[in-house]
Image (cartoon, rainbow, N blue to C red; front, side, top):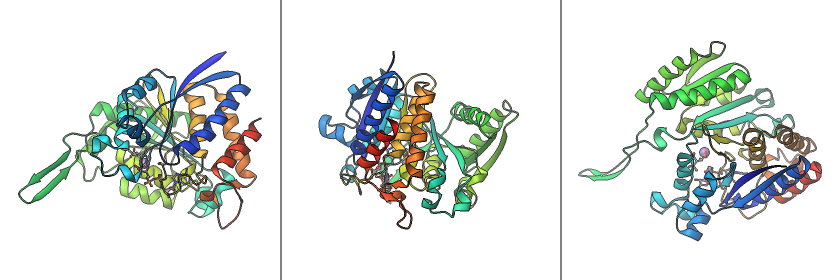
Length: 359
Ligand code: NAD
Ligand code: IPM
Ligand code: MN
């Protein structure tokens, strides 16, 4: 029997709640489709600060490296906001991404027809949306040097550096073009080339890569316009290729096309080696512990893991279809309730309903 090793990182806030639900569902799916999943839960984020004093202990890194895939819920809590940056949960997440060289973050935004009313845009603007944000994840302003804070005569100065090398742009652009080949043959590269040198290089390299993908239609948008276009006419997009910071912002905007940030999964991938499968949302401290979080973004991330990391395509599709059916039947966590319509359920109950459907 095929068997896969998963490092499970429940993290903080709603993380443990959505992880429990996802874990149960994966157990059931693996039985049904005849493969074995071996889970190992490890401390990460704020919970690791509590247990080990740091957000990303070396033992967690080693487990991640030795697994077939990593499934992450979310990290972060306001109570760590005053810690020095290297001790904060978010720094642990950035270290995970850089240690595993997860340069390609794939964030699909697909509309589930029964949810079009839950979107904050009118139905006719969202019902045809099917796009993917390809976000560069291990460089750009998140990692650029120099960065820091210094005291000057006129006060404190803080700075970060937005940097890309041509190789870094090339490798993420190739991922976007290859993805477009399997989809609707369009790449829109988003930058700020009218102002930033780093974006000028981004644009030049993207055009060079496009020469090797003749059938793909490459367009460019400035990031301010792209943000506007995402709410003006989101169905114009197929693959959006963009840098670390712009991708972070644009994918949260795009989440609302689907009805809730609680619906958006992602895969963070490298060339060879384990990927990290993680919802786009954070630890949602405002609703943690209330059993009202939407677990679907994490479950859909698990479906991406089944398909991309394990090539268990049927199992992944089966899981996605079951979620669609449940939503079509009207079950919704509070974030998806539109004008009081739907059968409201909690996080746990959504999981139980899904388990019944999968049996
Ligand atoms: P957030 O995504 O956690 O929450 C934003 C809003 O969306 C909140 O109102 C929250 O209740 C809601 N929300 C998010 N996920 C939801 C879900 N599954 N179901 C229902 N509602 C959901 O973003 P934030 O509030 O800006 O950040 C909170 C913490 O999470 C911060 O510490 C931040 O750094 C961290 N964060 C972590 C990740 C990650 O682990 N990948 C991603 C984003 C933010
Ligand atoms: C995300 C998050 C992270 C990011 C934070 C928590 C470091 O917002 O995964 O989108 O900015 O990449
Ligand atoms: Mn984000």
